[in-house]
Image: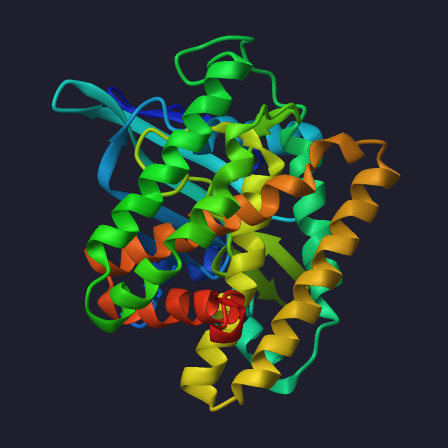
Length: 354
């Protein structure tokens, strides 16, 4: 189907030429290319198959009705020359229950790839932060590419600037309210004592947001950054599965805030799983995020787009993100609560609470 026309009712949208999977004539008896999955140890919402160690076919389970963000972004990243991702080859679509759906995405396989919940925790344990500059440049290059993605001036997903700012503030306040509601026990009581501080952090979102709204990644955390044989690659442009009806066009600071908070989560994972002393973990996270932000801003400035980042939005978006981490823990993964609570304890230590 990738080499010829897809049989009806399926359709294939191609982005880059598929690498050859052909065999020599003497090897025809071996049959189809070898396939394997990633194994049960890999946490994934969908189901991925590795073909001949060259291609990954991600089957969406269940299929997702169109429009879906990934095909549009794949096509644009190829056009923009952004290569720091798994090479996008194709998207397979077809009807399901009378609706046209995205069935599968085909991308390149990155040898020796590990996601950030593995390699970045190693960095935290070792106390090394050289990687953070690469992370900042990668995020900036992604935003520079996505900023050129055409979009209609107004659409159901992109309200006018004033309305968008109001909706951004309301969404953050709602996340805080829900986090307070779903976080029980001692953690919930502690969180309630910090409500005033958290609301003051979110107050910036009630002011006008004038920075450009671009097509963001939407779920940019270290788990979406693969470290592989030849460097780093950002993956998974499906959007945030835990946020419904999120505007795909938002300030770049939204992605940046999720990336910085994920570095703080890495520190918490290193404390819990690797026995890293909390003070060392906090110091590592602070240094890593500072290096990452410096590299990110330097890259934007070098490309004459410093306007893409409004730094005053980072902390309120970080606070909202931690609220969403608590909501995610309550709904889907209770054991994850420790990471978000650990970060909040770091931000709001007892001695700073009056």
